[in-house]
Amino acid sequence: MLTKSSLTRRSLLGAAASALASVPLATAAPARPRRARAAPLQLTLPGPTGPHPLGTVAWHLVDRSRADPWQPSRPRELMVQLWYPAHRTHDHPVAPWMSPAAVPFFEREQGIPAGALLLPATHAHAAAPVDRGRRGRPVVLYSPGLRSDRSLGTVLIEELASRGYVVVAIDHTYDADLVEFPGGRVETFAVAGDIDDALIAKALAVRTADTRFVLDQLTALNAGRRRLPVTFAGACDLSRIGMVGHSLGGATAAAAIRADRRLRAGADLDGSLLPPLTAGTDRPFLLFGSDPGPGPNDPSWDRFWATQYGWKRELALTGSTHISFTDLETLMPQAAPALGLTPDRLTQAIGSLDPHRAIRAQRAYLRAFFDLHLRGLDHHLLDRPSPHCPQVRFLR
Image (cartoon, one colour):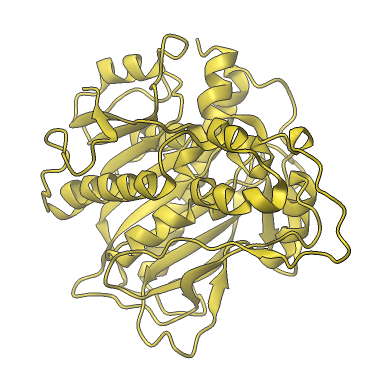
């Protein structure tokens, strides 16, 4: 049974899995009075390292076969975002990190002072034409944590897309903190009840159904039966699909790969699991956790390991925390001066590892995993510890 402490550290983490509220701002030293307001601090994301320029497009999906489990009077609605290699990007604007109508909700809920921060832009161009490659691109689905949203996975998502993948990021409506739909409608977190095994099981069932519905719609899109502002027909190689998620999204990847054989490989970024919904399969699975790893309060990874009979590896990122596997790893240090965060509070939130090294390691090992199992390209990074990434420990 998952303990409350393990859920707090891995699967849920409250608002820390969703935004800057992981640091209680009220403990920061008060700012000195100023005669004039300081200019807002512009946040940035590290650029992806792959050779491909990026495009992105949001996609509104409605599953009319399902009543929404969290809001039963409505059909199940999702927002997903596709990220992909693109060409002719110069005449397409750069996409924002967070959808515009969601920004005021984000700032208000996270206690960010008005005008203190300018949220970053991405490195992707809105609705730029798709570069399909020779025979379609391999696909990776991304699922965020509970009370999180797809924006917080952008650093890893852009890296995979720049390396030739189509990445499909899913917002799981109502267990996400914020989801903006067409017309500026914003739906917020609406999961009622105690965070226990029963609620997590329900959330995993909802998310697994979401994932399978997205796979169905992606199949129709790739066949030309669905329309977007960009043409995606033939852009995806649907024989090569993987999934990665952070926190509860990592458990979602494990549950979805068990439920749907279209998923060929999966990765869990520091998320508690919930056997038997997340028991192992014959397909490859990567466990990549924070330091010091699952620990005695979270036996779920041990249970998964015992049932996983396909390829498997467990890694730990030394000096990291749960939210190191989100964009907050790079955004919080930038925001610290504007928010009055002390070095100790920052270390408590994101760990002691240098953020650039943390992001570089995550990108390298996630790419190596999907290259190996979706492309047949072996970088040998997953064979043994690397002197180039000593911060990554091989646990088994």
